[in-house]
Image (cartoon, rainbow, N blue to C red):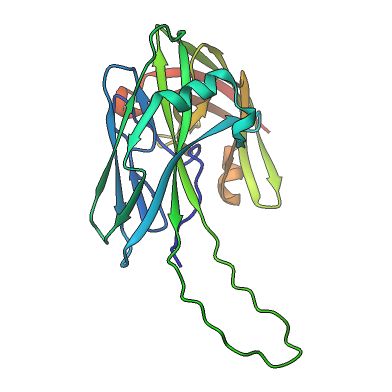
Length: 274
């Protein structure tokens, strides 16, 4: 069975576009970059690499996801997409749509955009899905002793997605850091803060939490996004218990652009975390 874990491209997913970004490793598949931005003038490439020991096949497609106020991404059925979302599906082109990767042999997926004349300014986004195709297992007929019932073998199929963003026109956005707090849940403690967005495009960057008097940051999180369909979201980052205790009290939270495109500050705030 392929070891291929699902990822959604927020906390661990990272950025590309005009600039390259870190690769996203999930199970036996390595994807680089993990975020694509197209301005309509030229295409780009996504590189896939099978880091496992056996050949693996992946099917590539586009789907629509919408961000929630909790920071998750909900998959939207095709019959429920908006006109702008349908436009994104129609304008993004890619090839190939199915690849079989021998071990440690990279494969390039070409990604481009066909921008219809008169397309209104705005940000258009779809998510590129790389779904593992399981190996076909030969059918076997093994008699079962009476009374043992029916045996059914289930093979889970997992996928990983990266956002593909098309920007049309002169767009801009700002972000603001809200209140911050530490919470305890069934999955362990988490550092949380509110992040709001204004403007006509998404914001994307890295979070760094520091404490006055300490040289090294307490917490760094890459690839935090707020997409245009939400004006604000909660960011929740799971942390070890000992770090959760250190994060309480006065801290400085900095939200900055990806380092590959300069690392400029988007917003910075001092908060007292409880």
